[in-house]
Length: 191
Image (tube, rainbow, N blue to C red):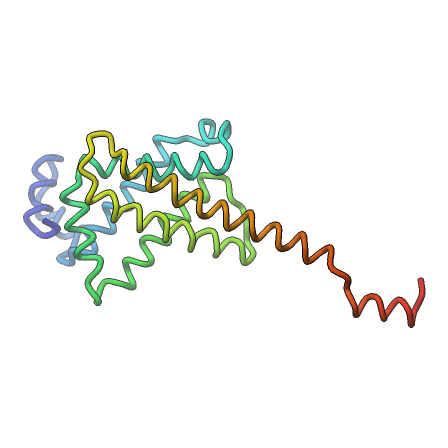
């Protein structure tokens, strides 16, 4: 579980004074989950350094970043299941959303995203939703190689890419449409 017994067991395993570990971790299970998610973020950054990601296209970067997180979580599947149950409690929803946002932000930053406009927020909201739904698929995936989860992730990323393509095409069409205010302005004030 995500409580004092887990902290004591982890302290014993890491050869840390149990009282210091208890003080550092607190009593709230969400504090423990937050520390664990930060450890997953750090593992992800270590597993996929910038020089590795630099050779990939953006779609492949995001896919690999999520897969690394899922592969890491596979070693702790029951802990993830219990953590998700705690995170879904009404009193924890706000912190859970922030944790998910920070993980999505970490993935986009590792992927090289430098957007600071509205796009910054939409990318993170979209990836947060993809990652959360992939985690829910993961906890029910009984396949040995997490094939169901990885196929689900690939489909969700395909959906996002289709949406982005449609959005790009709509923008192109809008640029091709006549601009009536500009037309009338040019009639009145020729160049």
